[in-house]
Amino acid sequence: MTHYRFADRMIHAPASFIDELFRVSGEPGVISFAGGLPDAALIDVEGIARAVAAVMEEEGRCALQYSTTDGYRPLREYIAARYRRRLGIPAEADDIQIVNGSQQCLDLMAKIFLNPGDVVGMERPGYLGAIEAFSLYEPEICTVPLDEEGPDLQAFAAMVRDRAPKFFYGIPNSQNPSGITYPEAARREIARLLDGTGTLFYEDDAFGDLFFDGRPREPVKKYLPEGAVLSGSFSKIVAPGMRIGWILAPQPVLRQFNAAKQAADLHSNFFCQVVLHRYLSGTDLDAHVRRVAGIYGERCRTMCDIIDDLLPPGTARTTPEGGMFLMVFLPPGVSSMDVFREGVRQGVAVLPGVPFYAGGGGEETIRLNFSNADETSIAEGMERLARVVRGLA
Image (cartoon, rainbow, N blue to C red; front, side, top):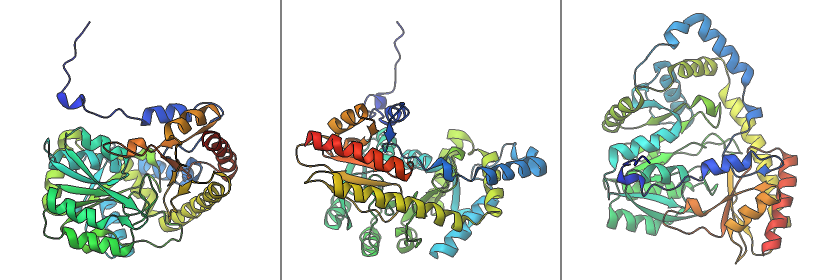
């Protein structure tokens, strides 16, 4: 039998729940609220197909060649112009690096900032993909409780003062897993608390386009220009299979980031970058996003109404303003893992909250995804979930 001598860091790497989720979600008859998928029916397949055809006809050889690590300049110019127009951030193409979805940002940010034993800050609960990505670099993950008012600012200030994390990773807009959006006052206070400390704010804005009311929220980076990096993605608003995201960062960070990315993969899929830019150049992205966000908002309201009406006393939930997720707090004594297992038996899949709590916890919480099921499936799936929870309460 071959003995494989893996790196020590893999011993402590958390087991991924994501593969299990996809397996369960694909079983016949199961209505899944467990994944993190946008609705494939809302992807503009025809528009993207036209962009592919145009690129192949007009610049196919160029688009199929190697390119630079920082990414297709016209696409970076598009992203920068959108920041200036929508959010008033004075971004330029040279401030932006294209990546393989915002998930790659997590790995590369950890790679360039974290030594084993360094402190990194996160929300509690926090994004599972970030916990997994950071853990491979063996940091100490310190968490700050999150509620409807945003991070606990007293705990946040104490963590920055006493632990001096390399960076704090947060999702101020429609957070994953909770769906919570930071109030503007919390964003300003976070910027004030971090200014001049040497702790960077790593702002993941994967859901910033998906507010149900169509109104963008100002990012923390607007209040902390040199002390924050801002990542974004086309996965939730155009097509996740393209794997195109970006990071907006100060030049000293981008130089290190670019070197790490070049060593990792040379550059992100250049063909997809060119196709995406061609598609965006002929599409009213804002109108498309408003339509998608409006549909997700209707689905979210349907799900929230059913939770309020059918789940037993002692149940609570968050109230998302946008995004794709909400969090349910189960009645006392009801285990999220029991709900997960019994739910699959009864034809509904949910995601237990435990993996979102670095260091343990979350046994009484579940995350629900409302973007990838139509209203009929939401109604039926939530009735099944209500039966499961009532049976365990």
